Each structure stands twice: as structure tokens, then as C-alpha cells.
Image 1 (cartoon, helix red, strand yellow):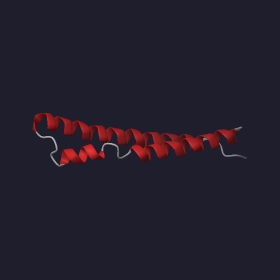
Image 2: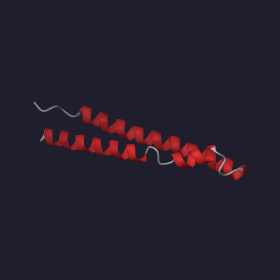
Image 3: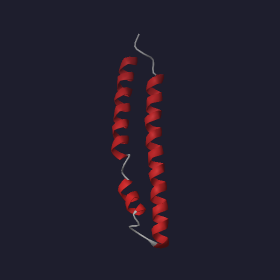
Image 4: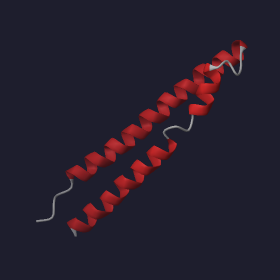
Length: 80
């Protein structure tokens, strides 16, 4: 039974890694546009600050999800 749990968790880890890889760059186009002054003025500055903060938060959450899943997998007992 432990091996089934370990195999299931291994599949979960791989799925989380794939999803993280897929979404890691989700806010890059918006951030690049803001760095190129696509939207100026006070509202543009606020949006630029917010989109960069959102990008940092998204990446932190994705990284934590991957690390958490990897820690869980590492904590599962090996098959005897």
C-alpha cells in the first residue's frame, strides 16, 4: 500500500511541476509591457507596481507548491 501512495504522490509532484512550469511566465507579457511604458501616469505606475508584485507572489506560490509536494514525497517511506 505504501508503494501505491508513493507512486501516486510522485505523479502529483510531476503534475505540480508541469503546472508550475506552464504558469511561471503568465504575467511576463504584462510586466514587459509595463517596463516599456505601455501605460503611463499615476494609474499606469500603480498597475505596473501591482502586476510586478503579482508576478513575484505567483512565482513564490508556485515554488512553494513544488517544494511542498517534493517534501511530502521525500517523507513517504521507501518500499521495503
